[in-house]
Length: 258
Image (tube, rainbow, N blue to C red; front, side, top):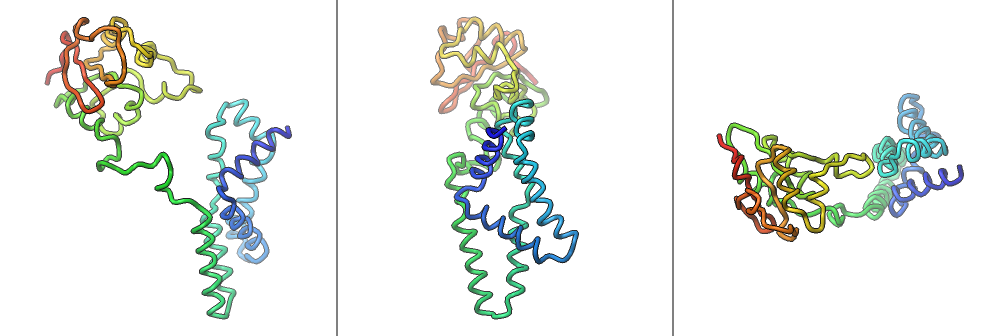
């Protein structure tokens, strides 16, 4: 069980970043436990966070979440139940209200803001943050591809490369996909023959087109860097459209019409 306790500790430390905001929060909890007279507020701002942390560190908890339910990737999200920002902000205000000397209150308030500023990292420095190129905040080529395949008044079905699958549904409900986000998460265990063919280093064109037809797909979208053993036009698919990074083929025997 010691291993599970360490797992919880490592998760909390990683969640706390450089540690300053975590220490600030813990100091705020202790301060409110000692000074807060209103029972409801004390329970919400101090006792409740302590209870969540205690549960988080009980070895049985990480065992159930990570080993039994296989949720290692989302284990840290239970820490989101702790209102760290609200507790820290409320404790800071309560503490400053007790300071009667104006210049000292100003100095301590400034110190608190500096702690918050240096205790975290700007979100825009994250590797997963990229400048938005459109109002939908999704790759521009997804919008271009979906607009090209759109047929007014009806739904169409299209096979997309993995990297585009999460964005299509965000943009339009009129383009259906034979597989979606559920196949992108390995631990969920969803399998799909068409998806596997799209993931092959070199796709078997005959198998790819047959599977697409079996699933009622009108279009196949391929990354221009993805290899197929033969041209799709040899199996009844025609060139339809292309963007900077992708090329679209349409089933000549099943061209969607209004």
